[in-house]
Image: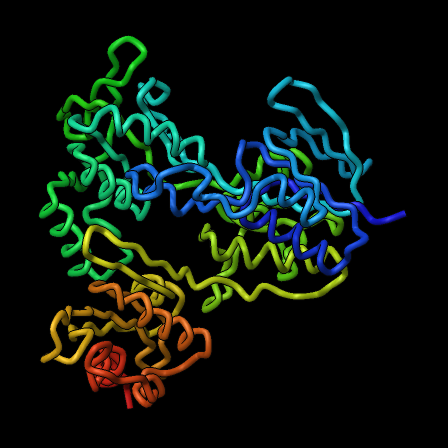
Length: 453
């Protein structure tokens, strides 16, 4: 009798796990249960779907239920919520959300890839109509309809993280008056302070109103519908729609109920092979605790790239392998209007908290030869251990090219390189794509001056 695998969750991590397990062990019987109505979609593209750059929901989908079921041989079900895990009996209970029926399915191995959900703040009016979140395709469809209906209206975005800023751009370009409320005294506080200031200027130059150092304390309502917000300073404004974007938390309630060990921020605790405290159960993606690759400490950095990697590892190991996940650097990149923002590794404060004698170094350098048309500045900040010169983190803002340069720093941190070694890299040069002294080399050479000898 063939071994049976059940996968809870049909997006990045879950489908990566199911697909890898099927490739490694074709005879394995696999079922995937997904609570929402879509599988294998690019959640990171949702802001651009809301703004209309991406036309249809299906444009976000990489694999359909039919393709998973018939082409890959992995029966996959949508609107199917796993409500209970019986570890002793090795069964899961699945509720059909279309008709309410419940069925029980046995497993030999189980992969939990339940993802994460938006944080709902405990404030008056949060459950009113007109308050939106953006996590699933269904969320995107609802928000897109609202933005279209209020193309001359006013929107409040609660939270100034990457998703909030991306949606702010798309709403502003759609003709909506946008107000961002951010509790912190500056936007994206993991960035070097002057970089945060440039992000703020970019938003304001494009008509976005940013309220720093204050959060929304109450959502005002007209009957059951949100009509305005009151901030921490007691100021009120009238609004047509509200987006809550203050972060996510792992969907780990099912694991907790089943008695599995949890870790930081409630993420499911797993070892390097993505195995939970139950040897028959693996977990991966946004529902799990991760490990910082530099410090080795527990971390929670939910990212699609990480989910796909962890899913492949979990699927391979379920099928008998022993691959390990080495951890995360927290590498990220986004665009706010014409400004690109990227970061990886530790911030200065994180590096100091981890026990490093850390310093930072900031430079500005054009991304092409100065005489070549279209050159734009890249501003780079390196965080390093001044005793050894080892690179610990990097941040950048500027043109689109900042993403590629940040990837070089990702490799450098992963390989434990020093700024001196980075300065010796034989990087490409052509006036149309890079100056003879690339911003990477300038950043490294300036950082070398802060290393103790």
